[in-house]
Image (cartoon, rainbow, N blue to C red; front, side):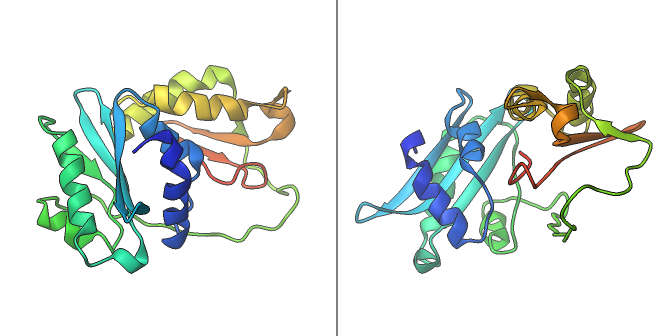
Length: 206
């Protein structure tokens, strides 16, 4: 799969109700440690998968998508075969499994580790009336602490992956984070929680 195939991947995302954006795909396809595979039928894209190696820690599979009209025909299995072949020799491979993909992944020997929960919240428009004392705008000097906490939770260093996304939000159209209030950081040691304003950014990556 190439960068020019991303629009096809985005179409498959929308057909599956996923909210990934172009930058999410670039994290896999524009990295020397990543890659992807594209399934086609009569030159029409019908499936994708991507992968990313995190040094010697583990590798991550993602973007396992099959067009709804092409499901239950072995496309997912072929994509998994291709991705695992590309990662041959890796000692550990991880992924997030949606309920639709669990059976496929189990056939390849994957087992559950944590449960994935997705949620939505309806927030009123305008400024938030109450902000806790331990919440403030994120600053560039916070990144080292945030990345260290992320390594502890995620299990690998992904600062090179996160830094461009976060830095772009710290300075938006030449304005500082304090002016835009697009990212906040919760300081309540040992926990650190970051978030982005959906008013400015369609999603927080990754």
